[in-house]
Amino acid sequence: MKSVFKLMGAILLSLTVISVNATPVDTYEFKSAENQKRALELAHSLRCPQCQNQNLIDSNSPVAQDLRLEVYQMVDAGKDYDEVIEFMTSRYGDFVLYKPRMEPKTYILWLGPIGFLVIGLLIGFFFVRKQRISQVEVQEISAEEQKELDRLLNRDDQ
Image (tube, rainbow, N blue to C red):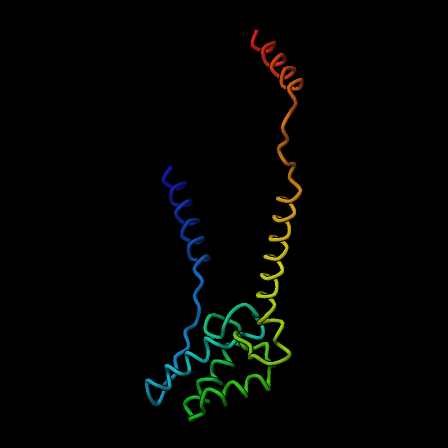
């Protein structure tokens, strides 16, 4: 019985060790705390070209690691935000930006959701309006129809 518990413990321990996802932590020496803060902000605002749904900080891909190093080196070398962004977009395209620039080729990206909202509201408005107009108006019934209705209702009560 002890061997069964030892085996189960070994299996549990090995599963725990396997499931631990150790990721390397980038450690860079900066000239100032301000440079470190700017580099982290930049790395958060840039998308990993390989992962596509993660920023450079969250991604563990080798490409993201290289780009983090590039960003950190550029910031520590004195490059400002716009210079780093220009370098990254010239190399990887506008896709690398999590927040694309507002320019003619991205108008649909920025204004599309507003357009869909307006279209949806207009469709909803016209649908409700049409429903209200097409509802059957209440009509007065004649005395003969009222007698017939009373007769039918009284018959159901008996």
